[in-house]
Image (cartoon, rainbow, N blue to C red; front, side, top):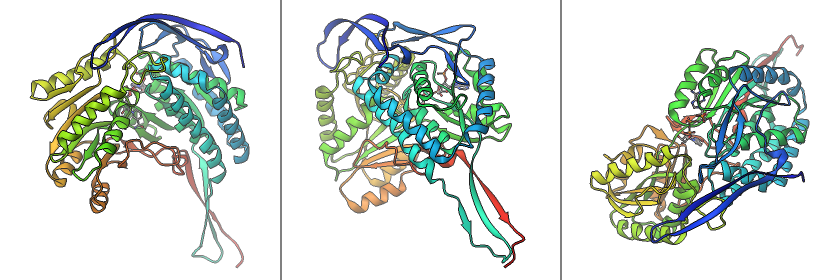
Amino acid sequence: MGSFCMLTRTRCVLRQVLLGPYTAMERTYSLDVSARLLRTEGFVDGRWISAASTFPVSDPATGEELAKVADCGPTEAKLAVDAAYKAFYIWKRYTAKERSALLRKWFDLMTLHKEDLAKLITFESGKPMRESLGEIGYSAAFVEWFSEEARRMYGDIVPSPAKDRKILLLKQPVGVASIITPWNFPSAMITRKVGAALAAGCTVVVKPAEDTPLSALALAELSAEAGIPAGVFNVVPCSREKTPSVGEVLCTDPLVQKVSFTGSTATGKILLKHAAGTVKRVSMELGGNAPFIVFDSADVDKAVAGAMNSKFRNSGQTCVCANRFLVQSGIYDRFTEKLGQAMDAELRLGHGSEPTTTQGPLINVNAAKKVMHQISDAVSQGAKVLRGGKRLEGSFMQPTLLADVTTDMLCTQEETFGPLVPVIRFNTEEEALAIANACHMGLAGYFFSQDISQIWRVAEALEVGMVGVNEGLLSTVESCFGGVKQSGLGSEGSKYGIKEYLDIKYMCFGGLTP
Ligand code: NAP
């Protein structure tokens, strides 16, 4: 293990507030991680590079600055694209077995350093440590999975209609891939793409979110230690001011063949326009607005447990978080009462490094203001606050439960990305499906029912890319992840994820003597 570096000590007063009385708590929080994993420069062509200026990265729980990171601009982005292009002609000639072995080493190093990698996530994004460790397990699992898939990129030999010809379909890497990722999974959203890209033989330039570059840079360090060649994995961190110009280089440069983006639908639309100019292949993992339906036949305790899992992970800041709760009239009161009790019993706000914390802060004050705006809008139209309803210090939000919600309210029309449970009452299955599907998004959906015929009907009718049946947690590397409608294009993870980085070449082998 390397030496330990104390990057920062932040002192803060966090009130352990939830739904009842609070206790004021004064604590000092330190990010202590191995010095070599605390990188603050860009990573291009196997080297750490500085930029003309830096931008601050802060702990969202305390507001304290953690680090100053190189603010890469279009120049550094172009350098990274050129490095990735040069490295592509080396990396694609590695055998699948060689690429697999290097990815496996990267996975092993991530596993070895999981505590430090998890601390970086907790400090830069506010995520509770238990969840950060879970994210590192999930993130590393993509590298492991694609190290295995690297060796299974089979082509086809197709029966030919002509006696003197053979038909072969070859799988080949598309080339340089630009990878743009959000802050809510600072590590896993990178490896879900990069694992597949590198396994296929592509090289990448990663632009992490402004809020969470430290996790991306630590991944770069470990990729180099694993022996992944220079130029194969590049990272260009940048501030929000530089993001549009860096994004433009990454999505328009003719040397880039593929853009893979995870983030909001609004940004996805901008990047799609950029990519159209040079007809790049695109994968878009965009926003959600997941319905969570509880039918009268449901096991209410299982539905409550599913709701807690689906809603409150990462303080409600995941794209597959349940966003609209639709509960049938016969079970409505029991569900809301038990869910309120579960929130009282299980949710604790605090700094993510406290072992008792289940709910960290939202990523920034604007995110908390957006949730408050949705709550005020709902209350002004007649919604009843059963739990929470207030913004606390900084970007901490009380987990909030609203009853008597209608489809006219903002909280059911927009993705919330915060700890808000708005509950709508419905009477029939048709009504629930009509509400659930009256949405431009279609990422995840959930429902709870014990009626087997209803389960098949509803699972098939919901217009989403992923459906949880009596289950609130879906994500796993073995299965595909992706949405329909304006939630995106393409699929990640599973045996399909690698396809996003492969072209199929038809080889017609003629002139044969039958
Ligand atoms: P965002 O604002 O779209 O940002 C995502 C990434 O895009 C960040 O790196 C951001 O950089 C960058 N970006 C923003 N504008 C850009 C531009 N003009 N050119 C190039 N890059 C640009 O999304 P977010 O608010 O961080 O993330 C939350 C959203 O992501 C939610 O809608 C959520 O549902 C979605 N999400 C989807 C999935 C999925 O798999 N479908 C997974 C996770 C999250 P800066 O940080 O510098 O702004």
